Amino acid sequence: MPDLYLRTLADNRRALLAWSVGIAVVGLMYAAFYPQVSAGGVADTVANYPEAMREALRMQDMSSAAGYLGSTVFGLLLPLLVTAFGITFGARLIAGDEETGYLDLLLAHPLGRLPLALQRFAALATGAAATAVLVFAAMMAIRSGADLDTIGIAGFAGQCVHLALLGTTFGALAIGLGAALGSRGPALGIAAGIGVFTYVAGNLAGVIGADWLKYLSPFHYYIGGEPLRHGLQPGDATVLLVLTAVLLALGFWRFGRRDLRS
Image (cartoon, rainbow, N blue to C red):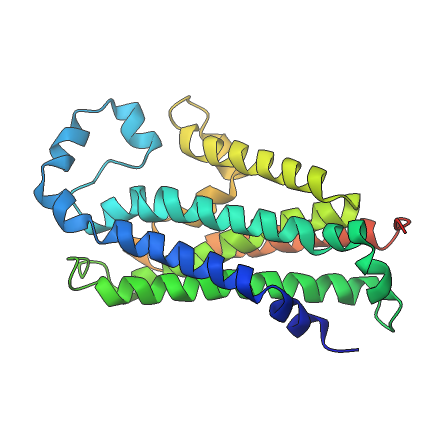
């Protein structure tokens, strides 16, 4: 049987290319606005916003490149897009195969359920990593021209690694739910609901006086350590990796023990 990992990448090459290039282009476009933002008095306007709003939206320092990118590009747009990629792609990798009957054909070959699931997930993780690489390349391309050179290369690299890990974490959630439930719709809905809840919890925890909530959110470990300023955060990255492994283990454990729909 052909390598399922490579087959998954080949079958989904257009979708993966569209997601990765699209996300990188969005990041490039909004990052390129920084000179206009820094020179246009936006920081002064934001300073008049209520403190709670600025904290929730990470707008405490819109005048600096790291502050601007941390609140808009890497704080809002890219993490939500990468999360959407992980959830939509992950929800259909196994559950979609089962709904269409393709899973029966795959398992008719000498390939166990766990190797199948792991190869499917590896393709998703490759897509998340490719997206992060393209985002990093886009930031490097405009770093000097867009006055972003106050952010070190290590800062951009660290933030992009965290971006890939975030997409992989939510991808693991979606593919695990799909493997456990055998239905794409519920897996997609539950994963999306968890994504929205954890994003809101991660941003509003301090505002509502419940700081402990942010530690339940993958988004906190994605950006809470400010990788743009301080580079890769090994502790936060480890949490995302462990969470990914746990989600996969739970979903694939159930997948290996339930009856599949024919």
